[in-house]
Length: 145
Image (cartoon, rainbow, N blue to C red; front, top):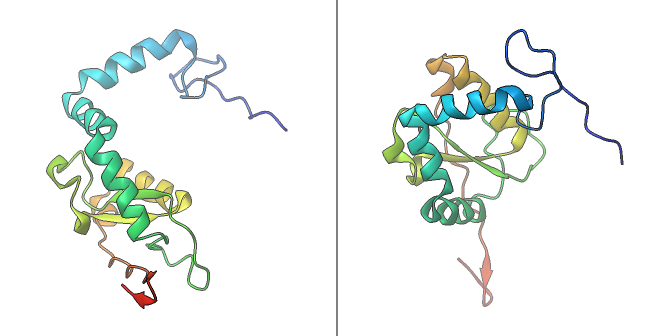
């Protein structure tokens, strides 16, 4: 199995090899301190590590197992969802974290694009609201639910 391509540390001016999180061993501590000093990000980290989010996420993926295709890339192919995206980001409204209407199931590729749009500070693109895909009907005891 081929090994993962090595990358350079994300710290400006550093040319050391980065670990899996994007920073070298020298700059990892500073990156962790900066992240934890942001109280909003600390609250988001606590939310994402909590039981309520993990249970909600599992339920949501089970209810909406297909990518909601926000960019229209999967028109003729059903792609399995493996991520849950918050339409209004947790950094803006943490209280909407467990709201079904604020979440969309997406594949990893779509989620990466959506997250990049949010990081680019272009909320008009990032807050694009697309409809929930209908739930899949499941056969239970010979009848559809």
